[in-house]
Image (cartoon, rainbow, N blue to C red; front, top):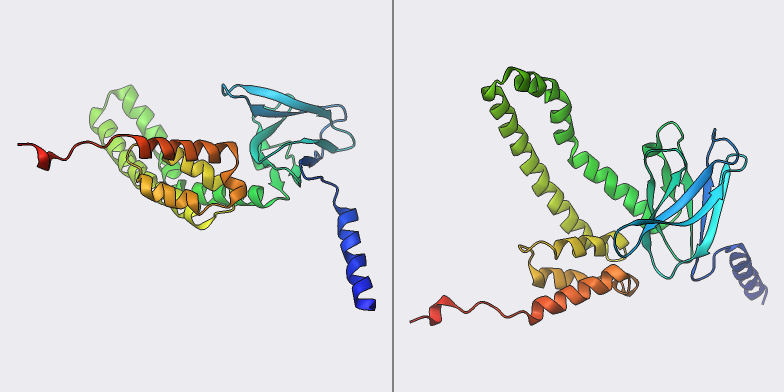
Length: 250
């Protein structure tokens, strides 16, 4: 009996500590060194791709908080008034997102607190590592390219462009493999359905493979707007007439 009471008490504590309702979200932010009254803007894209403001809040004592409702995961961003770059993240229903703004380097701001955001951060880090060779080549050879262009040295320009193209191709192949392996191995990730959506814009994509990957996704991910778009795209591909076989031509 005592064990049952203890378990019930523990359950009540968990419920009491949960600040976020089923279709609600909370964004808890820290903004150290940013003056009081500075505006934080929550933005998302509308159906035309234009950025629209969903909410604004003022920084108070190095902190800010936003609350609202959302029915499914979606990409949003927050922007510090006056900053050049936004901070992208995945806003989720029933979850609390934590954002730590780095005022000196917005790109180094940290987002955490949910599975999808943790995955988004990790996925970007892995992609950055893949693209490192390309970035290093550009950094190392930009002065040489600029000098060759000024001198109209076509031999050097051609050589650098060929080397860059080779690395670019290698990085492209590795990145594509990374996208594919991620979507296959992370059925609960919102990123996976976005990868599938992008794959179906590529005519070379194996539609049967894409359908297998989609079927393996968690229901919550399938039922998002990108998930429904992927399902519709797969249905269109199935319904599309196939080219006649050349073997039947006399």
